[in-house]
Length: 207
Image (cartoon, rainbow, N blue to C red):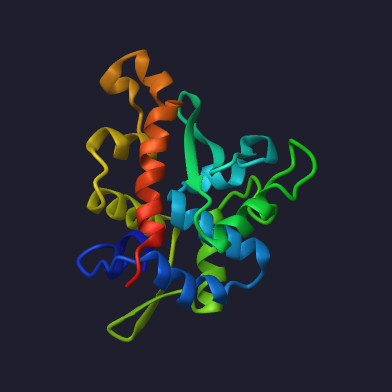
């Protein structure tokens, strides 16, 4: 069944809270690269193309945040968006160490996915192998890029993100709303920090 038609993405969608993700899925990862990719996807809902393009030069570790510029390949070239991830758990601090372990600026952060033609297929295969997904009506559905994207956007909305913040976070084409100013809004530190505060609530939430 195509990943976007799986029942847990549609009529039987189940929200995955952060503590549940860490306890039941993060620890099942095949290796360090897989574990850190899962965590980054959980926190950012990054598109497949954003993961395949992500390099060391796109990442900075600040006092309170992991600062990431995610690049998206679009019809008219490349678009970028600023994401701030609060350093609010041991797993996220380990993610920061992993992301900065790459020495060269042009080095890809997730080499197994770098410029891969079909990253969706590889992620689903890894998650299926490791049992990372939901079982619905006796059928196992491994988590996909789209699942993580829907999950974090839903959690942000539930925790107070407004429409502009959601569009900013998902990397929507804001120039259609704000004309030429839309390009610059994608780099707004103020909006990124507001979203980071909501992410911190999500991270600290206990089931």
